[in-house]
Amino acid sequence: MLLLPLKLLKENDGLLHKYQSIFSYTLVDEYQDTNSVQYLLLKLLSQRNLNIACVGDDDQSIYGWRGADVNNILNFEKDFSGAKIIRLEKELSLYKKYSWCRKEFNIEQQRST
Image 1 (tube, one colour):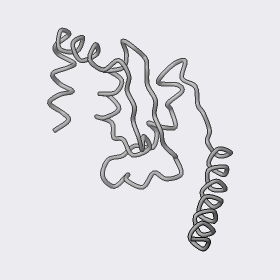
Image 2 (cartoon, rainbow, N blue to C red):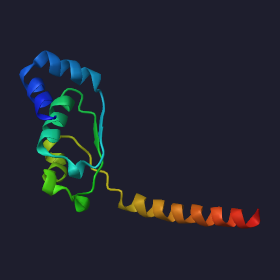
Image 3 (tube, rainbow, N blue to C red):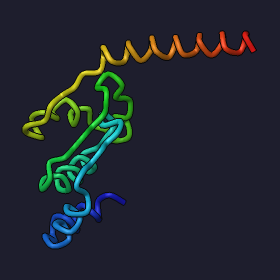
């Protein structure tokens, strides 16, 4: 399912340019679970605009058995020059605190009604 589009984009510059202009921005979630073909498609489609956002956690790479390559996320800065890594450890802990407070607030609201 992925090999044919990759082959077509590699062999047909017109088709590649068409899809590069359609996809001005690319967002990939769970990037740690991408395989080599998905990586190559991302590389091809994003090389014109370089507007890529990938979200992932190398500690959560669990799909190696089905072809996922954790090196895709580990080598992101090297493979996409100019990329900026934003670590969310602090933001995540704030989110957890916020979620806890929101839950407690909702419980209090339910008690008072």
